[in-house]
Image (cartoon, rainbow, N blue to C red; front, side, top):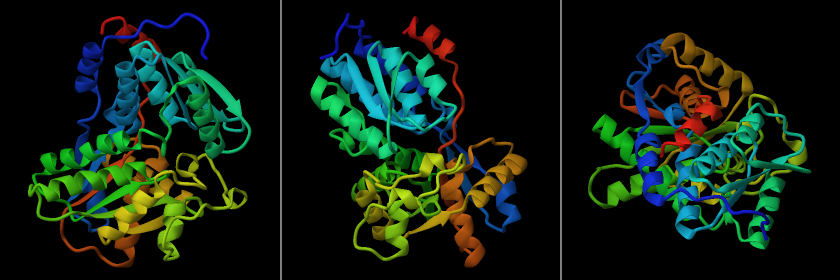
Amino acid sequence: MIQGKKPRLLCLESYDQFCAAQVGGSIMLHVSNWGQRFKLQNVYLKYEGGNPTGTHKDRIAFTLVRQALKERNPAITAGTCGNYGVALSYAALLAGIRCIVYVPEKYQGTRIDEIVDNGAEVIRVPGTYEDAVRHSQQRADSDGLLDANAGGPHTDLQLKMYAKIAYEICNDLQRVPRIIGVPVSNGTLLAGVYRGFQDLYRSGKIHRIPKLVAGSCTGGNPIIHACENNLVSCEDLDPRNIRETPVNEPLVNWHSSDGEFALKAVRATGGWASYISDELMVSVSRQILEKEGLSTLPAAVAGLAALLKRHCKDLLPPDCYVAIVTARNKFSSAVGRRVQRHI
């Protein structure tokens, strides 16, 4: 069991107030200049960079930390290579609970320092991201921590939070897009968005469900592999055949924890999945900066790149298109601690 003095947990009401004001409700940007370049009009970016640590991961991190508060569990854990670790550690910092993050020992991403600055305990383990998740799950089981890993016991809660993105898209546009491009790794984000559109359709609030398009790094994702090879289900890839780079790292997965959910969503909506090269991700990210003034990580635009890749091959018809951009916006831990003192 965890030793030492238990941290003082923040009251649930105060935490809820912060989440309601700061998490989710991300902006929708009409990228008309970029669209004109490719004769693709009515393209919108659902930009997740406005969340507290700058990514969509905040939506599930704050929700799972809230669950820990609700259960009076003083600690939470997950395996991560970067963004999720920052989101989870920051959410835990504000809540006053302990955060244990498992990271592959060879990973040297810039966000590790942020995780440490947020007060989390970082434990290096041999192997890949999937190995880090396994170690975290074992620690959760042995010490009674809240397991915040993808594909874990709180998957349903994670999908519900990502479902809210679908509600926000429809509210912002006042219409249903024809296609939505989504970057995928574990597939949780895409699966959650699909659930949101299913809920809206079943309740009669929308007349169609958009086609969902998955974009991920070349040769490094089971969801894309299954789609491109017409496989019945996702199959684990051989980690030895995956080339990890500074560009594709946020997307690399030899085992997608929620891959089956995402694969079903792509096929049920008549969408598609595309491997996206590092060069194309960098190019699209640079174009968005030049044409729209929006700075993103290359991996964040994988869904948009998948739309563009298809459009360049077969022109997409006039309609409304959305890409979820999982950008990041560095948030100072010092600011975070000041916020903590006032909520």
